[in-house]
Amino acid sequence: MNIEKEMKIRNLASELREAIADLETVDSKVESLNYVRAELHSVSPLKHHPVDYVFWEKSGKVEANEYNPNAVAPPEMQLLYESISNDGYTMPIVSFKDAEIIRIVDGFHRRETERRNADISQSTHGYIPLTQIRNEQSDTSDRMASTIRHNRARGTHNIELMSQIVSELVEMGKGDPWICKHVGMSVDELLRLKQITGLASLFANKDFSESWEADAVK
Image 1 (cartoon, helix red, strand yellow):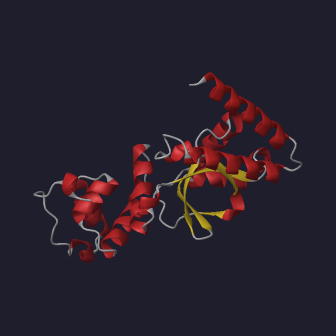
Image 2 (cartoon, helix red, strand yellow):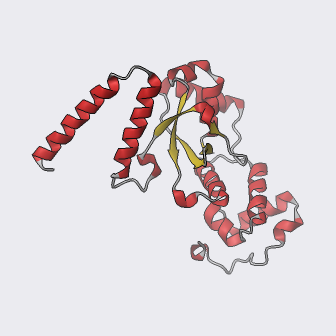
């Protein structure tokens, strides 16, 4: 980097730090920091990765989705509390902004921990850390698939709720190839899940076959 440009950036960063430090309220500081992060994110060479922009939002403005297949038992919820209490928030909650509503794609229980525990909420001033999924994943079916991918990648998911999501995806007109590719299921897994539900309507999809290749599905 050009030395002159590097010094200019460092001087501007110092001025910005001092200006934000002089703000009187926590809310004004958080709002300004979110704005600055968004501006920097817009020129980042890594902006195609959602984690490049993490911002803080009031917990009360964030709503859960209605299809989360990840059920956490009380001992694990207690462990999650201990983790956040001792380590702080180390992972942002994945979200999607629908008009004026921010909905959770992944991280519902991290938000619940803040809501249920006054000490956690006090430590964040009632805010929770968020990142947003890519704009091209704005369809409900894409967000549902994203939720399952996040949960399955951690090895946690609830079969009953997974079955419900598959049912909804079928009702949306998503074929078996699409579901297998975007949810990360094998043909056998999807078949077993459909059998578990016992709903004949899930077998109405005529394209269910081992002959198709998931890579060809978009």
